[in-house]
Image: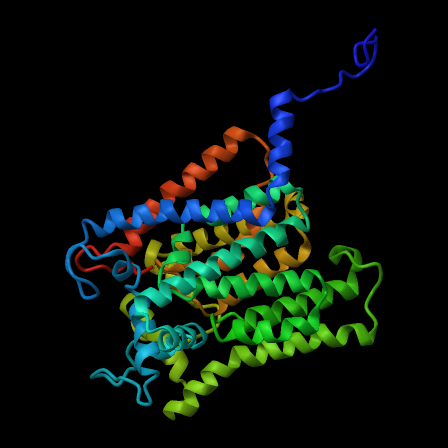
Length: 416
């Protein structure tokens, strides 16, 4: 009797010949080329959505009617990055009639616009062309690094699908507009990959540049503190055979200190250049004043204030608690353990940082991009139907996000 058909034997699954042929061809193609194809196709889809909105865009403070792609991709914060790339930062803060600091360029970190400025001088290209190109290229790099990072903990199919979700996420439009998010995400993923590989000294220049690209320095310092604490208490949780020696603790401690210093450096630079001690924080507060008026920055108060503004109290506080409990459950559930603890610790550290300083409004979805490694959890189910539905849903949500946040519809109070 044939193998697998004897009494009590377990039937042997033999793939169809066409499936075997496809898998063989699939494995011949390098993983980086597959991810590149996915990234390019995703950017074509998102670009088509952007052009669809550009075709109905009325004249506004950023563009003329029916702008071309590069112009439409450089609005909102792109306008501030243009100011920095062409004129630098102001030495005098703008003040309104009541004496409050108003919106200005000090809210934005310098690495991205200075890189764009350098490439503009080198190539002679326009701000729009260079800025969008930098985002496209660093977004591509981020996708490749993300696949490498996911491949450390997931099988190839799941790691690739997680990267597909990364490329088509609802706010993946950031990979092709004049924003610093793509560059910041690339640097962050490189830093996380180096952390997983325990290459602490190599992390230092990456962390320095990351802290001057997006305001993540303090969050990354908190990550390193949490990582060291877990390593000391439960080495197995971070896949280490034993608790660290004092000598082994020095490199991650140095990374934590450097990242924390970088996180505080930009407010110090703004103070030095303007002579105003709270130049950076007052500038950031200007953006939320149209929602809740002028208030001092009290750590961990912004989210209570924000949810109260959006949903009224006490419903706002109740909903905030539900959101936080849901997030805690998501990162702690058994399935989440398939990705390593360092990535989940990063998500917790970043969320704690946001809770401390960020005011939730329409740009919240973009601000949450750094917790993209959690997509590895979303990618775990193997069902083809599930995967198709999730990808389609992501593309639909791209359209929703573009409609509510990017497209300028008269007086628009939902900036991306």
